[in-house]
Image (cartoon, rainbow, N blue to C red; front, side, top):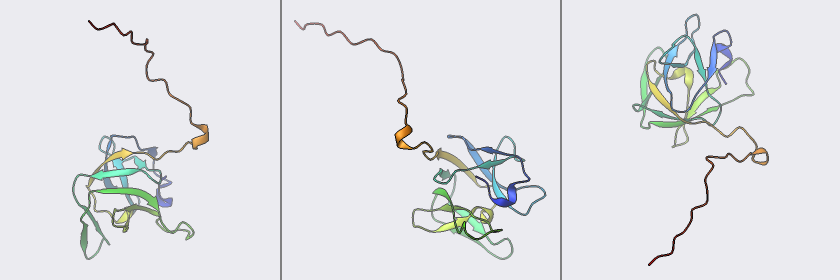
Amino acid sequence: MCDYSLHAISTRPAEVGETIVTTTFRGTSTRGFASEADMSVAVCLLPGTELAFADNVRYDNRWIWTRTINSRVGKFGKIDPHIPDRHHDAIEFPDGKYVLVTQLVEGQRATVLQLPVTQPLGEHKPQVVADRQPTTRLPIG
């Protein structure tokens, strides 16, 4: 999901293992994530997506100060979804603190570690990894 203010921007879902970068999208005042390969397309994350940042996370209020979170891992989520016309995309850190994605300093790189499970457990279908023949045991001695 991408924040409400990015609905006019081209988007695509995140992929496990890819590196994404914080950026301000052209024609908006909103920051979000983009692929290193195409900074004009917003990479949308589902709540529960786990990220590993290359460095401790920096955020600001765009005018006066920049602060650092002493953490390189976080989980994407939404805050205050009941309040309309407000940024909701946020990163939750292990200490329980949240930072809005739109406050993340531009140019930070993060790797998508894991996407959330989106299929209910009752609908899980087993996946065949490989067809194998049973191993034949030979007598010893």
